[in-house]
Image 1 (spheres, rainbow, N blue to C red):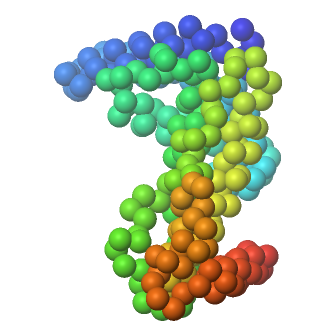
Image 2 (tube, one colour; image 1 turned 120 degrees about the vertical axis):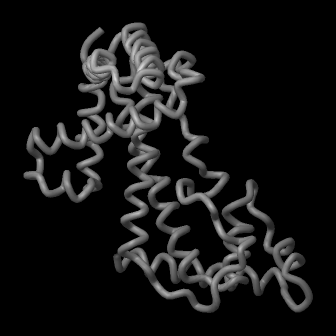
Length: 255
């Protein structure tokens, strides 16, 4: 197999060996020899993933998304590319240590796509933490009640969850990283919209957008009006919904 498409069995074997070394190191954390074996096992996985992760990093940087440390490096240089690829690899290792009991990479048709997905999830989380810290428009009335709050920052809407996107691409796919980032671009927009709505909408408006976006299929306006109670009509809900969308479009056009 070419560096672009690592041999599946070699990658799975390298991951399995890393799992075994991790397990042994947990029982003897002070063993210097095991630490060396752990580092060597991680390097063997890196050798299989380096080229795909560099490709992923290149496309990620094209979207101008990077941590401050990576963004501070000269743009477009190999140093910047390698730094982001290594950052993605580190995130993969951190996540894999939480799933070693099941070794999910063994069942993946394309383990490279599976691992890139892990890095992408973690990086998009970091991206949105930074986004939330620098973009805080004011809510139009009091905070949302707790039953409307979203306890998980990762996914935009349950009908558009990243988990529903296709990452199990065939090994011969020319550039699975491009596919993943295109999917993430869609998720990025949904994340940003949801964050904006959570920060600005009042309780009624939030209930309306939840009914339209967080259910599959979207609830009809008549049904939303019935949920809101006496005095609400489908026409009034539709008009209010359209105003929300207009404000949202205007806000993001100005960003």
